[in-house]
Length: 109
Image (cartoon, rainbow, N blue to C red):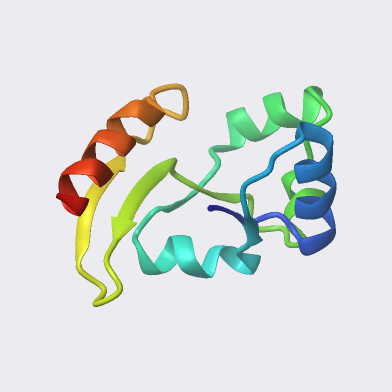
């Protein structure tokens, strides 16, 4: 499952455009990201870069906060115990899926 601050319509379009088969949920206002301490405001200089590239987060996210979540991956048990967490403020550094699969296999054992 992936959670994004994009509006429901933008989320649906993005999922279709990328051909994702996983669940992609909308997190309006970054409420979930805020709860996990993951939301940050895009700096003004980077905001300009985004706009120059045609990326308007206000349009995508349905608000003018220019807030995004840091990439994070969690495995959470039904009892709310977090069994695995990987967070990195650098969006280019993400764990490989096999790392998560190995953790899941250990939990199942």
